[in-house]
Length: 479
Image 1 (tube, rainbow, N blue to C red):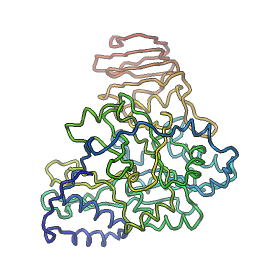
Image 2: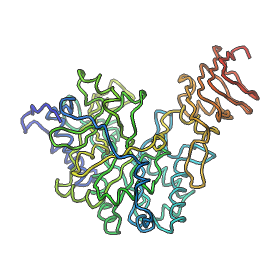
Image 3: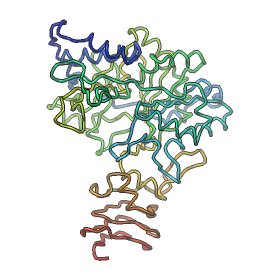
Image 4: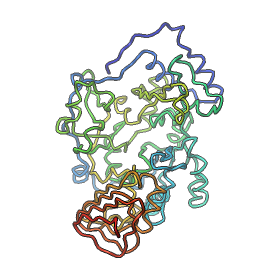
């Protein structure tokens, strides 16, 4: 990775101040080592830029469908599941959708939350294969209490299991002017920030969970985001991963035009390793190549498969630290007050670990395995009859095509806004696209067919009920 390496004199780097602060907060040696790696990149001025001249495009990868056809028949799934743990990243609050609790506690379908569906999937797999696949939630200090309270009420049996919670570490905010630990006496909690989901590796190591899982015979770890309803435990992928004996496998999808701004997979020329290149890592002169989806064809779904024994060996060989690329975010110490001091928040991404394994690989999976709920547009479609919940508690497309939803951000961006304007979600089974401009309130008996645009230019919400709207642009303002 290209880097600027002009470092200040060692004595000007206030590392001991960070160490003292992290010792006081009782952060593990692994967490401190990871932060130190990130901090050293920061003070060296590492840019992380990765020009096209240093990478080769990845044009061909194994396809999941082909693996299913060529895979070993009669694999002992029961035995494999005994060696497997499913870990869901559950540290996010869903603030972009107006939530103030764990995003996984948002109701998504039929009265069920993300967490309900995830828990029921685990229980279904255990019952069907008579094998107790392990279940872990990686919580943050923002989501732990709410999540455990919900589990205690709805899935107490899971909460009673060993190591069901992996706690994300905290990361010191760095004062941008002094490069010292940020201070904010008015609210000391704001001196800390989440370290990004790349923290999964030091958290596993520093908590002792990595060693405990290995001691319990767990070798294979499937990791995914709790808000990605497509990220189920695929048994064909598990069988492939186990038989391949690889240390790390990433699920990727083929990039479409809507994905051109997002990161992609590449192969670094100097060592032949697979790497993730995000947009911030691309020099301006290479932006046109970065966005060429015929050149850089694949993006990371954040569905990852990790061999725990090989992860342990890699960590041991590197003093307990995976050298992940730094993600540097500049903010203010109080993110809601722009007048407070500027800080750097140092983060890493877990998918970047693909470059840390000698035998890492990637598999192309169908787009259905990448179905994150990031906006109220996603949630609106998901709650409709265009999708259904299966016996296995997975959510699948029921309609001929997934509807393309574009709701007015001024009125539907936040969940409470969406719910106030959708007492009844319309039928979208035969919908291709729905665009809503202004405040349209959906009440019972509405069916959207084909391509529909609804516009309300008035200041008041206008209700739509008991009607089928097919391939029309309708101004409902005067209704």
